Length: 359
Image (spheres, rainbow, N blue to C red):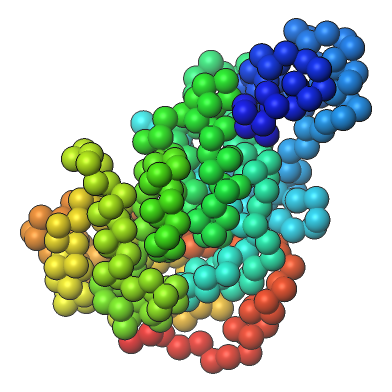
């Protein structure tokens, strides 16, 4: 529950609304999962809460630590599904990559999650629970450290966040709440493959930082790499991006572009991309492709990525190459798989088909 829902809950059981703030602090700022530990609540209220409520974080099934300090958790959900969450430490920030769905329905050809099929949307508690687990493991909300270890959230894990709009927005509301995690909107980034109507809705509801998984400069190629493009083509998507930052000259849309050897990484692709982004306040993140089992795609060479980047920069597009992190534990971008009950049977269909690169 977010603060509003908690207030309503306490009023319904005959308590004062301010109990919501107290409970939020206990759960999210102190990492408490037992009502009996909430010592500023009366004993009778703690007993009542034990009877009518539950604090149930996801269970850690496995934790892995990469050589570069990246940490990945495999979290078991109550129905047997599993999701993955990744913490990426850097000198000036600590970023947590959070999942929004068990699997993904979008079937992007370069993403490991897509191979797993799709089961269901995550509930708000399963989304915010990933932050709770990571913060506790990192000592942020247990008194082990006075510093904010997790400074940034990226909704870039398993799934398409905008296809789970209400639950994602509710969970992000808890991330923003000063009585919980107290993050600012600019420190939460939602990544979408381009669900255009939901981009407009997000602008009106909770305008956090927006990242768009573009990965191609023209519709023909993007239809192959990111199939949702057939429904919301690039021009329509970029128009929504302009609307999202309209009225704030300081804001930019981050465009993610995975670099796949011989597929979308030519100099002509770079020139097309520069022309596409004219007039769009933007920053481009070039992401070296991260291989996973069963894929025939290959990572573009460093020289090719650098040349691609230089063309964009020369055209006036702010461009950086993302450093690959955690690939030795399959925690890098596009590698998250988890374990889902594949109701779509997509993984079986994919494995039975010959895999070819998109040219």
